Each structure stands twice: as structure tokens, then as C-alpha cells.
Image (tube, rainbow, N blue to C red; front, top):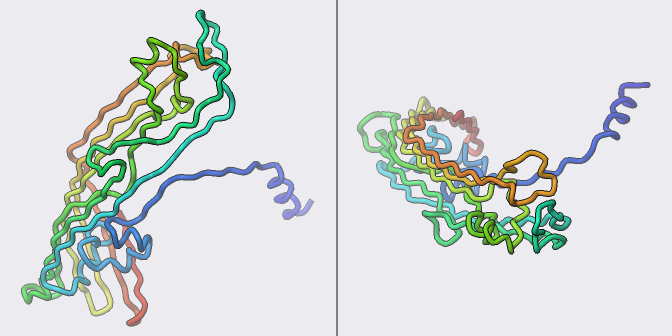
Length: 266
């Protein structure tokens, strides 16, 4: 068999994988809309988190950036099938009923309803434009990474209350993460230097703060093939880290007046 024939035969045995999720590049309103192009185009306070080399492109001596991307993540889950009949007595009153559709209904603690603003606040001093230090730009600010780390897939079910009465079917999503909320802020300092008319280099130093809380449900006893809620166990994790050091280095290069390349490592 030829190599091409071998590859065709192998690929015919493989299944199809389908996945989805949420990925929002950028940090702030402008860079979020420009996605990956912001690595080259960022030229204000948003460059502090996207590509610190872009700080050198600020057009004034002082630049103040107050920006935010507002995110809401809609998600629902429908599981095929019905609640199994359990082995315990008395039986569950909802056995045989179809699994309900569960919608994500989070309430971010620092959000506007279910919408979460992701802020960028920065002050940039272009020392070259100010006439103080040729080619040098410095910046200070705070930003949060783009994302929506909030989840509430309980469907109104309370595991402490409703497992006592056991009149309402537990959510079919319970073996995934049931609730989650996180907060992350990254105070940062940045410096950029214009090496020449076509090349800028930049560095960002960050000391972040992260807090995360989540609730998961696991099967508390082995062999619970009927998924009886009477054998489930609830775990809650609440973790914080007040010092998360990170950094970024970047460069922008303009070989022609209408073309610019950007690169960043975080």
C-alpha cells in the first residue's frame, strides 16, 4: 500500500471532534475589537498589557487611558435522557423525567448585572515628547485579562436544602463545575524605547492579585451508576494569591510607512 493510501485508510477510522469555548484577545475596548492585530497597532495605555513597545508610539507627552471591554457569556446545556431509577427507598419522585435544560446564570460580584467590565487604566509619559529623555517612554497602570470566569449552572438547585427534601431533580450539569467566580487585577509598570525611526522595544513588569472560588459536585461513593444525588458530595474551593509576578517584552518594526510588524512574549 502506498503512503497516501495508508493515510487515507487511517483517517477513515478516526472520529470527528467538535469543541467550543470563549477566547477574547486584547485588553480594553480597542484592542479587544482588533484582536491579534493589536500587537502591532496598540499606541496608547492599552499597549501596557498588549505590547509594551507600543507605548513609544503615544503622540503626546502625557496620555491617560481609561478603557473597558464589557463581556457577557451566554451558555445553556441540554442533556439527553431521563433521571434513572435509584436503588434506594423511597424512590426519587422525579425518576423517569427528562433532564431539564440548564442555563448559565452568573452574577459577577463586580459586574453590572450579568455583564462584566474588563478595565484598563494607565498613565503614559512620553519623555521624548516632553523633551526630557530622548526615545524613552514610561507607563504605570492596572489591567485585567479578558475573560468571563463566572458560572452558575445550578438551575436554582441548592444542594444543602434540596437534597434534604429530594423533591426536585438535581441539575444534570452537576458533575461539571457548578459555580465559579474569579477576580484578577494586574498593576504594572512599563518602559519603551525608540531605538530608531522604525524600531521600538518595550518591557512590562507586573505584580498581580488573583482570587478564585468554585463549587463542584462529585460522586461520594463508588458504583453510583444511577447517579443518585444521595451519594453526591459537594466541594467548595476558595483560593487567593496576593502576589502573582509576571512580565512581558515586545517589539514593533516598521519597514515601510504603511506596514508594521509586532511581536510580544508574556
